[in-house]
Length: 234
Length: 323
Image 1: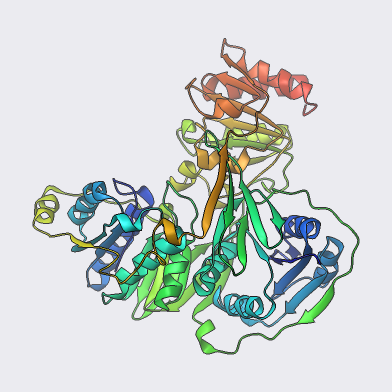
Image 2: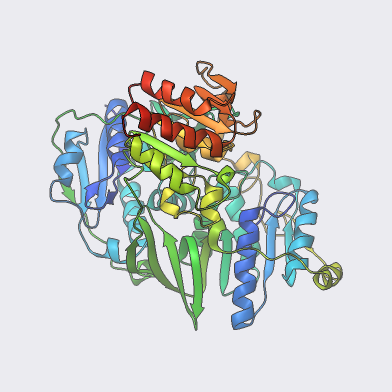
């Protein structure tokens, strides 16, 4: 089982994905490997994942990964996952700092496994996975054969905190670091040189007429009512 | 000749989604709009797509598209793109849209731009505008790959407009390969929401973590009833399970554009602002004068929602002669 994680501390969304992996291995056996791509500082987050219960960690650490777009990121993570044996890949639906939300399905396609996204409930019975996938009007119950990839939403569970015993044990685990060359990925696959999306310009947002912000003097509710009346709402 | 711009059409609750019609409208302005419509759809779906500007509708009503998630649509659209080579393919930033664009991006080894608010074409080069979120900046980006340019567009980015055209239907084959039948839809469950729906609501009252509990949403419902509005919430509140996910407004929830948006106890995280920032008038109540929500508010009250909202409710009742 694998996860991805981008920021220095574990992203709350990735912490939920990790929790779901730990929960499943407690029920069905197996182990969780935590996989992340990021600068050296993310080691703090990886240590926390190990302290929480992951039994191994792989850190994609190489300046060559810098500036990767979503597909470059997916190629690197998929290449690292492909070297392992796994039943299930769990990803956060989207990291909190970059909301594109398309990396998990890209990874699934590159690995040739079915993607089950936006899961807010997950169970495994034998080799069949069942998930509740969020939908516009509620949720969709979907099933897929393992191996598969699931992206989880942060509301799926309440991530546990690491215990002292886990923190001590985690110190003995060596984090495997992997470079782009280790994965056989060149500048045409990962990094800024491979990115298809190029930023043309970054500018200030269009000005919005400045609003009125006032301290509640005890008549805040009445002021809002007056404003609603002026808009013709009441 | 105008470049072909494709729109992946979606159906929800027996109707073409509003976002689909927004995308078709814009595609017809920029190039030749063509829509792909897969699976079950209302009887007048093709007529509707044509009326909003689609010149062609690629259509398959095969049940495989509803019985299995993502993969049948992926194989079909992928094959169509390779055969017809459109300049741009537009997807709504929806569940289906995101999954499909992501898989196509990996298969076709092409680029995708997410969170698009507008775009234009110069030949086959695309220039997309990513609207500023909260304190961030407006960005213009392009894709440098040779193949199709995939754009995931935010709902409510364009005004849908009937141009009164007629679409030609081109029937396409559904994929037979068993590999597309890997994620099976067992059941679709609708979670009922109290009160009117967020989509299309002209007034919205939304609550954030500042409400402190699920019970406090009762007063938001009361306020919403008084102004004929719907109730929404932030992701933090949904994650805390105070309200169902279908009430979530923001980047991973719904995008809304009501006449009036009353934000109660909402700090205004960028992800929330992304879903409501284009509301016509924004009113915010928050105890923290530094809360980012005040930067987009037309009227901000720095105060306690538990004081301000009840007073607002009784003042509206008084004005309406209800109290």
